[in-house]
Image (cartoon, rainbow, N blue to C red):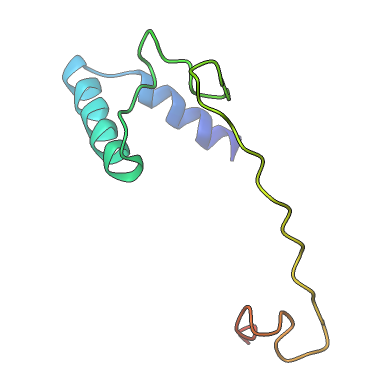
Length: 88
């Protein structure tokens, strides 16, 4: 699987300028529709990938603890009413 990922990384970095521009335009369009903010990865000023930089004035909040769903492996619906019964 690592070979496949490596192949895609290499092929993504190689190509004509028009092809790279088309990929960037597609990514910006999809990202803006999904997250309602601009796609900045690869920009010189981009600092958001792999970081949780709170220096921009944004206050980060801790999410509350959500306890795990109780499981009864011997029941027809092991997770109660949270999920449907397993297939098969």
